[in-house]
Image (cartoon, chains in turn purple, cyan):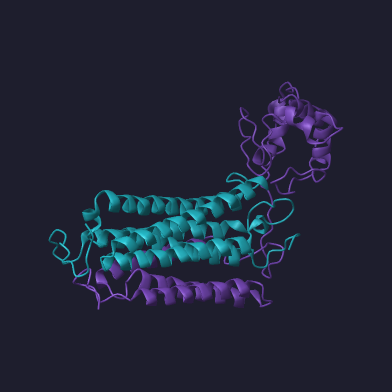
Length: 232
Length: 210
């Protein structure tokens, strides 16, 4: 046999053995890719994939990384970290309650439907009512924006409470709105987007905006549109 | 000065275990890397199903199984080259060690080119690290893996260069062995990513083009 590289190690496999192991690993990968296109029930296929990848993982660690031939201390250091890592991964998955794989629409298990959080309207921000019977404050677009919960999903830099990430950033919406749909001015686009939220959904965002036009008075609505269009 | 088989390898510093501390440290490091990648993979699994749709379908539709299978094969072959380099080093064959090290680095770079192609494609399709939960967790995970491969390629090329400048420095096969451990680890992490993120992640997702 070849000379040992270290007194604690048993002899390592020959180059030919390494190549045979490489062929085995390639065949397993080919079977995985082939199986991907089979018409097999998903849970079965997922189990099959996970088993095969554990086999590949073990082959590389035992033979290519020589753990089978090396001192136990090396193996225990790695296995310790590996078990902790797998534990952390399973813990994270269990904690967030999502063992489910694949697409939301095709899941067999009922998936909680995603609804954006709407911040509860405050009592007075639009200026239409005032506590204590003081002078009604004028209706402002910012006030309507916050009162209707828009800030829960949209960010407007400089407006306190408008920090949401669910919908597009509206910091420069006055400029952007004019370019969204050919033939629509910024104000026309703004009105369409609020009255029919699904008419045009910006790429990368989900069509989840609620229809809130019905919750506003004409004055509030006009103030909101004016405010948004003014954000250049 | 060529290495010859049966060279008595000057052992490293005395250690109470009789084991190389450099090698032990590498194994401890790889153990900690399991925690690192385990967390990133789990984060992707937990969040990918909650991502906002892209062009009306799941962002997982962008995953290209045939292309990624090819890049997986390239990385797997690089592991075979690596183990042959370690084997050559152990048998004191400097020339073949250089050849296999070069092949490993070459295939590793090939894998990185596939990743550059994939990332470009995704960004062109509108999926970036800031687009949604799928993009954030996918690019963080595969980006960190790609960084590991890049570091590995630099490491292997450094050993290759040193073998020409100071051949006596690579006389101890442990230097190639430790780099090999790192390289194989990067390969097994990809084995898990390919299975969990690509194959399992793409299963059962309804896509328009497929």
